[in-house]
Length: 269
Length: 315
Image 1: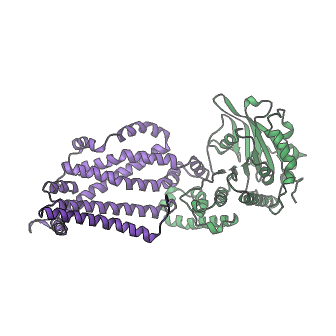
Image 2 (image 1 turned 90 degrees about the horizontal axis):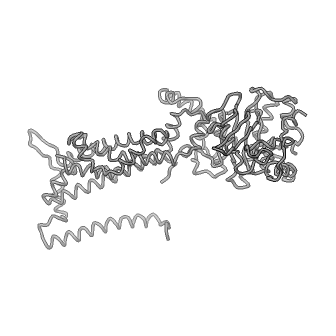
């Protein structure tokens, strides 16, 4: 039956089964390929993964000039770029989105430009960011910030228009609110869960832009290491990096979902 | 039994015409409004004294909402003035409260926070709440206490901590009414407030309004200004007669229909006590009069004989 609820034990069993099945499928394929070619590295087995873990966690450099392991260097670099770009992009999107939703003049002024810019794939703009910001930290932040800005601002602006009823605004005025209070106490609070959901949904695209840019221009970071190691057919390292990307993505998603539940208990799931 | 002869404002006014702004909660003066070539309201005049509960009825599309928006200040009329407590209304303000048909509670606030929201906005500012946080917290406790007391009054004490989506339609409407009344605005507009409710809930809310009216009477008898002045828009004629002490009919069915809707009916209603049995037979005469004067397109006559509320008080 469509949308028929199932007991929790069945839900958890099915979820665990899916995961176990994927691991078994991988194990079976890996064993078969290894049987055909013992030196294959396309689908490494447990031993290959252990080698990969050692490789990525091993401290680099010399005793006199130690360098961090690949994984700690790349995690720090990539996630700092991601965090900076997301925060900047989301912050400006929220300000502009609310202004567009609240003031018709701002909407009229910005709407055509934003609609046009939202249609250009952010990775196609990489050349411009490279020329303007060089190939350092600022370029990645700009890529992510601008990359998510145009779509996020449209979502927030639509949310202000659709989720905040005219009646709510009128009522706030009748309760003594100033214009600033209507924005802060009514509009902002009403759209907050949508804003958090928007940030959640934009983590994926932001990661795509960042990894693509790191593959092309970076000297460190997840994209750089994945590209280098895949060229050397070190898929054990590549899979470890992909797993870290997946797990951190899930954790960020979960953390934002919990944040939304905590800040907006009225919104439900 | 209902007091059908003595409208409580008769004694108070002593037959004098209320023309001083300090004695009127609402004064609508020659209000006209039109959209392009279509005239909606024509020379609407209306005076409401503090403490009155007035029902506004009229056929669909006659301009009730336009009049309400003009009084609320969200859509000022093209011509004429709206004065609330002597002050001209050109934008929404805390002097005029509103309760919409679809509740319009703030989803992100609990019932008590919704009711306390007006106190917060009216009595404090964003800088105060930000930079004087300890003081604000103290005041906040007081506001929530006031809100809880008001919710008790509208029989919703048990629902204080619930969000609007956890409340039934009737409960939401009680919260919305408490939210509008707690600020003690000069006038509260109820825009078809019970239209979406079932009969039993509707009746309990009607009795709540009658309770407010009794409080107004008590305030008058003690020489205080009544707290609840209400203009309720409804399409239910029985409800209009039951909850209000005066019914106003707005309609285009008059001699000058091309110019827009006018007040074609303005007469007192019997005053009911919340404990009085509601006998629909009592309403028949006035309901038929209203139907003829306000809703009957064939009755195109001069309606001055039905616009007689203040004259009837004088006599």
